[in-house]
Amino acid sequence: MNAGLSIEQRFALTRARYEVNKMSRPALEKTCLRLLKSRMEQKNGVQQTLMSNGIMFKIDEQQSGFPEIISEQTFCELLELNVDNSEELPTDIMDIGFEDDDLEDDGLTFIA
Image (tube, rainbow, N blue to C red):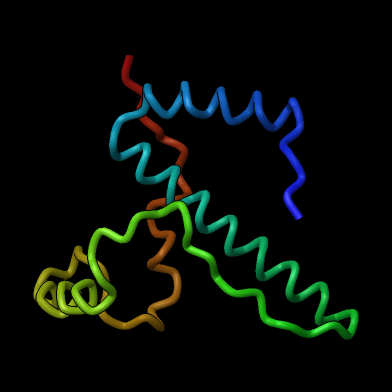
């Protein structure tokens, strides 16, 4: 099932393409993380709504659209190497709250 995009959706994508070209790298990184987080929250919301109505199934996480720069194993090794630096990512996946530490402020930086 592949329904095409509406005119409003195509406009939003065109506008996003223009605005992304004007963003600084830190602003672009933060925006990307916000979008990924909201997509995950939407998926969880759909699953919870379905479960509350007696329908239970798993929606797989699709990471398409994001290139894999390093493998999962390499990423885990980098986390372990950075254990001395407290400002780096935590090595414990159960450290809830760290994943959106800096995503809540709206101080995006745009460059012309």
